[in-house]
Image 1 (cartoon, rainbow, N blue to C red):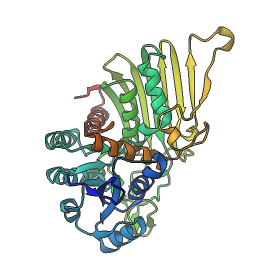
Image 2 (cartoon, rainbow, N blue to C red; image 1 turned 120 degrees about the horizontal axis):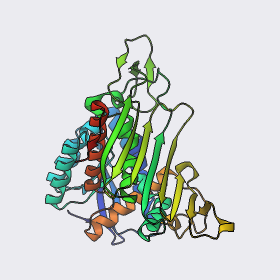
Image 3 (cartoon, one colour; image 1 turned 180 degrees about the vertical axis):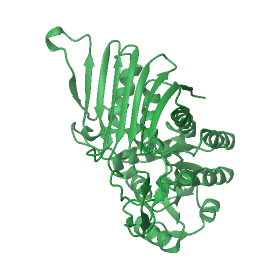
Length: 394
C-alpha cells in the first residue's frame, strides 16, 4: 500500500467508494467525522473516487459526498494507484467480485454485510485477504455499540457466570406494505436471503462475539407477501411503485426465526423480519447466565439493563446502567453519560477500528473471518428452513 503524506504529516488513505446509496453516505460520514470525534487518527481518509452503475448516480454521489472523481466502472476505481482502501456498499451479489479484485490489487477492503451470497464465497474472500496480507472489515456496525462493548467486558470478566441462553431480534415493518416495490433485495441472485441476511446477520454477529461459535440451528422462514410491483425511478430505499405493471414474485424470506445451539452448550433464538407490522425499527438482545443477565434494546441506546444474582435480596432486580465514557468508545463523543448515539455514529467507531487495524498491522475486530463465520450460520439456517430439520454449522 502506498500512503500519501498530508501536509500535517498524518498519512492519508485514499478511499474508493463503490456505490452511492444510503450506506455510501453513512460510511463517508464515518470517514469524514473520525478525526474530529477522536481528536486524532493514525490515517486520514482522502475521498479519491466514487463508482456507481450510471453516469447520474456516480456523478451525483461523488458531488454530494465529496469525492474528487467519479466513474461508472468499479474496476477503474479498484485499480487506481491513488486508492488504498476499497469500500463496497453495493447490492450483495457484487461483493465477492469487487472484493477479490481489490484484494488482488493489494487494497484493503471494507464491505457491507452480508459478506457474500454463500459461506463458500465468504471463505474464499477471507482466505484471499489473508494470503495477500490486506486488512478487511465487514459492516457489522452494531458491534461498535458502547453497550455491546460493556456486554463483552461483563462476559469476559465472568460477571454473568456460565452463559445459558441468548435471545436476539431485528424486526421492522419497512416492507409490510404489499405495494413496496420489487428491488434487488427481493431477488435471490442479487440479495441471497431476505430478512435473514439483511437483518439476521447483524444479530448473528452479536451472538457469536458474546457467546461464541454457533454449532447447529433449526429454522423456519416465510414469505408472507408473495409478489411486489415494478419499481419506478431509483431502485434503492424510497423507490416508487408502478401499480399498473405486472407484479414480480418475491424470491426470498420476509421473516425467519431459528433456534440455535452454541459450541459451549448454550442455547438461543434469533428472529429477523422485514414485515413486522408496527415495529418501525426494533433490535434487541437478552443474555442469561448462571450468575447474571443483561438486556439491551438498540432504540434505548443510552442504557443497558443488568441483573446480578449476588446483589442483596432487598436490592435484587434489573438495574439500568447509564452508558457513558467508561463504556467502549462512548467517551469520544460525549464527556458525560446518558446521551443516545445514532447508527451513523456507530459507523464512525467502525471506521476508527478499520484505520487502526491498518495502521497497527493487525486484524480488525469484525474482519472477513467474522463475516465468513456469520455466513456459515446463515447458510445453515436457510438449509434447515428448506429441509425442516436441525443442521450443523460448517
